[in-house]
Image (cartoon, rainbow, N blue to C red; front, side, top):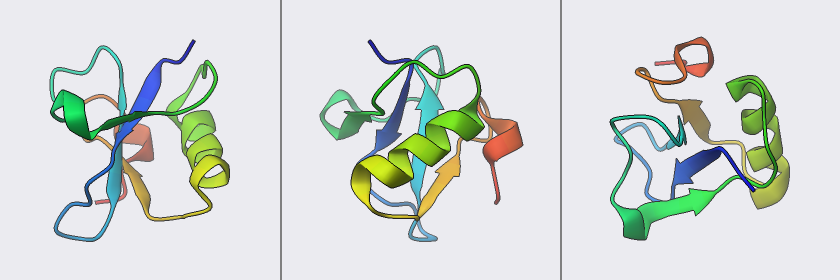
Length: 71
């Protein structure tokens, strides 16, 4: 079970955006990738996705993960 996902495509700043499953601004279904595990906070999901993908270019969605959004 998972409750966060990320966009497999990068934004104009080269970042993959992470979203909570309840976000109203999710990427298209074909671009969604699950972040493994169930996370209580976007910071936990952010750390997990970095481990899961061996990448560090992730940013939180401004709408659903504002405390993880860097800009």
